[in-house]
Amino acid sequence: MNPDVAEGTLVRIESDLDIVSARMQGRAIAVQLGFGATAATLIATAISELARNVLLYAGRGEIVLTSVEHGTRRGLAVLAQDRGPGIPDIPRAMQDGYSTSGRLGLGLPGVRRLMDDFEIESSAGAGVRIVAKKWMPYPMT
Amino acid sequence: MEVPILKQGPYLIATIQSALTDKDIVQLRDALVEQVGKFRARGVIIDLTALDVMDSFATGMLQDMAHMVRLRGAETVIVGIQPDVAFAMVHMGLTLEGVTTALDLEEGLAHFECAGVPGRGG
Amino acid sequence: MALAEITHDGKQTFEPTTAMLRELVAHLAQNRTQLREEWVRRITEAQLLQAMTKDEIFAEATSVYDSYVEALETRTLETLTTYAQNLSERIIPRGVETHEVVGIVLLLRDVLARSLFAKYHTDSALLNHVLDAYEPAANAIAITVSVGFVRERERVIREQQEAIRELSTPVLQVRERLLILPIIGVIDPHRARQLTEQLLRAIRANRAKVVVIDITGVAAMDANVANHLVLTVESARLLGARVIVTGLSPEIAQTLVNIGVDLGKMNTVGDLQGGIEEAERLLGYKVMPVAEAQMA
Image 1 (cartoon, rainbow over the protein chains, first blue to last red):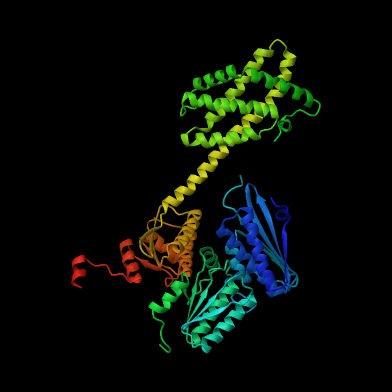
Image 2: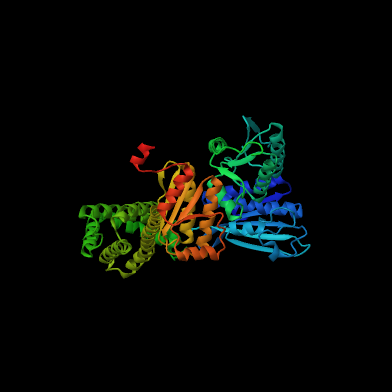
């Protein structure tokens, strides 16, 4: 396996060009790990949402793509983190239709549905840290 | 990258050729909404065949665009959404409600020709 | 993988082990014909590999024997691993079972061990040395062949599962631009996902405009799968195809109402016939008896 994937690939998010770059790299890594085309598209879409959230709410931050293993299953973890104002009310942010940026508020609940695991940590003023994972349907051989 | 807009008869056709940044999409929306009036277009076709990701921002923008085009007197058909992209979109609840979709450019044009686009004011 | 890594012996016994292995290899090469025949006799006696003819067994036994000796000689398992995989690919379709493969490998181990006893039984110290070298190597070889077989079997089973899943849901084109997807049996999340992918690709490949999904053969579905069905219908619309769902059982109707499905997004018709009629109407066909058509 590519050592870069094991260590994690970091994509800085500072402009809308970086959103495109993050999702392209995410798709490439997903395919390299063995995900099918459909799953790779779900992952790339989730990365696009997470990267935009970083840009929209914090202005800058990063996406880290890492290959993960759990028992005999392999997957891809997408970490999105920023040092922005944070999300004061996480349960509300996870509701469909909620947004403080004035646009469709489907970002985070959408990401949760696209991926298998979803964890979010944040407190007001301390930034946001989201880890979303997608697992392959078959065990490793 | 700017999206070229082609004028064909009473229709405007925008074919997206590569990944779009948020700015590109906003630009496309503004250009199309403006040109619908300028060319007195009756229909707009947006071809997404080459797009491999449609997230909530892009979908929201396209939906807005379709509604603005409608208010300017033309209909929008979105064509060429790839199966995997469609599947990801509906997972997020992005269903392009109120916007007509068709398989490809040919079908999009056929929609205008056969189904008969309501004429101005019709 | 080198055999020396698998032996429990430390560095001190490494050299004697190498020497012993060389001695072993020489013994096995010298007695190739006799040991091979003995092995095949034991395989037949134990009624293993009955799906194969005697000649086939002998041919395979020869190859395994030679790969076995080569593994001991070169102290690597690569050739044997490749051969074991090849062998598995050939014999799995013929119905050879795991216990048979494990059985023949253990028999070979036994045949060879007995011949070593016979040769060295007068010198128990030497015999011990030979066995010290032989046992770990033989174990490694037995494991390689057995695991290779089981892996190959698992791969075949997985492939068959995929094939069955695909066969169980054909996407049928009944008219130009009209597809029918009859779903029968239980839909689990994995199958649901596969159905969606298959249908969406078929819509593009066949340039379908209308799809009839018939679920008469599905008794019930849980909320997850019902949600997935709704997602499929919506995905198809994004591609430019209309979906008509037919044959909803009372239970499924209830599930769909419970999950709060938007009936504006879901076009349902009572049965498959009605669904096809509706699809034809959408496509602009009008089906009528020939006589009537001639009158018109």
